[in-house]
Length: 124
Image (cartoon, rainbow, N blue to C red; front, top):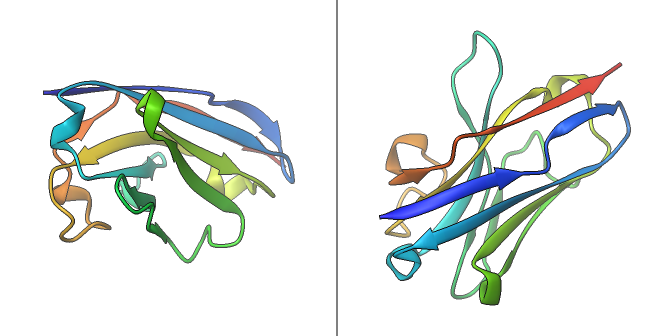
C-alpha cells in the first residue's frame, strides 16, 4: 500500500499562485508515476498533471499547460504542483494519486492509490 497526504490548498485571488504538496509513504517503490487530478462540484474528476519517478517525464492537461508545473523530490518521496496564474475555473478539490505502471498515465481509473484531497478556491 501507498499512503498519500496532500497539503497546500487554500483560497487565492485570480492571478495568484499556490503550491500543492503530496507526501508518499508506505510501499512507495511500487509506484512508477504520480499524478494530480481535480474535481469541481457537479463535475467528473479530471486529469491535471503527471510525472514519472525515474525520468521525471511530465504530462499536462491543455487547460493548465504553461501555468502549472509538476515536480518531485525523490529523496522526500514528495510530488509538488506549482500553480500560477490561477483562474476561478481552477477551483476544485485537488487529489494526488500514484500508479504502478506507466500505461494510460492521464486516465483517472488507471491510478491505484489516492490521497484525501485538498481544496483550492480561486476568487474572481
